[in-house]
Length: 126
Image (cartoon, rainbow, N blue to C red; front, side, top):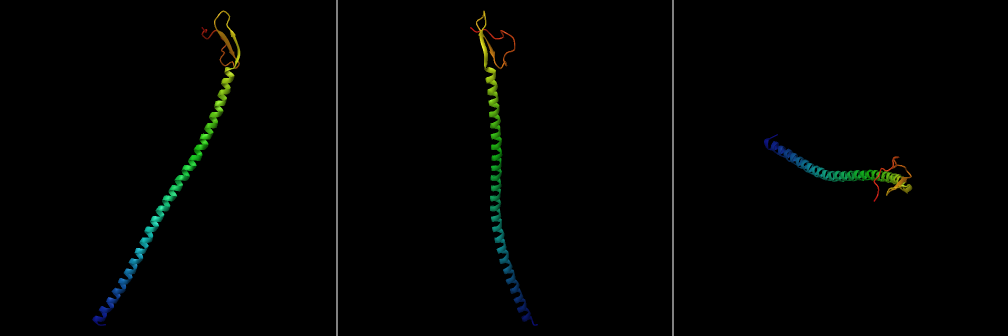
């Protein structure tokens, strides 16, 4: 093969390599665009997934907190009713009479919670 033929063949091979390189660059550019789009889509999807997970966690906490608050309210109401019943029993007057020779009264409570058995423990009234 003579020199001009070798040069022409080498030129043809270089042109083919350039075409292949150009096609490869186009393919890489397309893949890069697809990757960038996938990252954008993945980022948006990840953000949406995280937002949903956060909302779900808040909803779960809210339900739990509401159950705890309802239980605490029920316990408080029960305890208040018990305290009310105790006070009503304790403050129910069994008898009340004047103290002979003094300006005062003697009160006996039905619940006997305030009676310690001693007389005259309180101040006389005016």
